[in-house]
Length: 127
Image 1 (cartoon, rainbow, N blue to C red):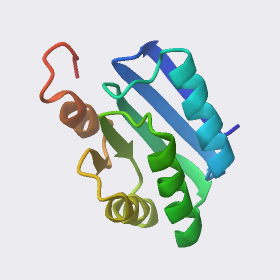
Image 2: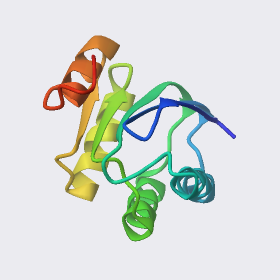
Image 3: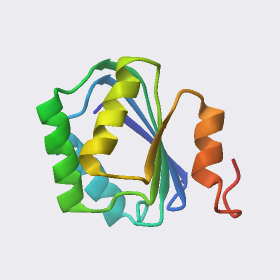
């Protein structure tokens, strides 16, 4: 599976690293459900999602299907910061935001900015 998950601060904060090809909808759902079942992912969780090592991006149709599947399954973190390289990855996450109509997700090119945004309104979480 192309996911690595650091859940040391879960359920408050999770760090996802995705490498290789964009994960299938089934892989995304299985990971999300496993984290929910173990109490590591809740609607109050915040997540940093690093996609800088992605080598193959999804088509627009696959992206839309993935967003819809996630919406139906539930369990999305309350805030998600996507860490990307500039260019196509940046555009991919912006397209995902539009499809999802989701103000709880933002895209960043530096980890420092991403963590600052993720934790900006919760003093219990340190950047």
